[in-house]
Image 1 (cartoon, rainbow, N blue to C red):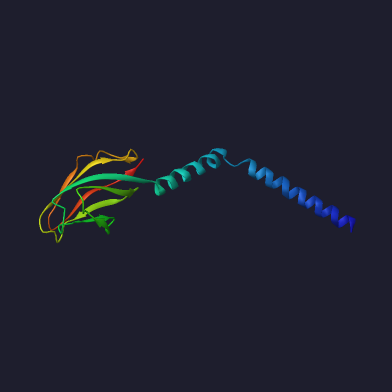
Image 2: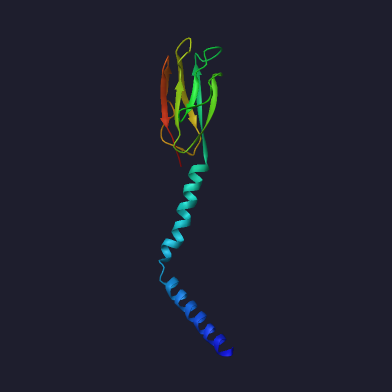
Length: 137
């Protein structure tokens, strides 16, 4: 019984030494940098930005739709609105069915929205107009 315990202990010890030796050769730069890039990726996909828009001709029954990635997210029913966006979102204005053309202008953006979009303007009149594809910093 003592002899089998000794052999077992030797085998376990050798296994541990081989494991430590194998782990020692892992490139530490990969092990350290990988979690940082994953954190950055998660932050980019969970962060939200804001676009500030102004519309003319969009009040009353003449309300175009706000499309984000092709899905209806709301209606432009006021002269000034804030649109919440995420990294990679495509924002469009759907003016189909509006009684008259609607002009939508980006008047501002939150500091985490990359790019020069302030001042961009579209006229939506019986069509869908792309405002832009947005990236977050």
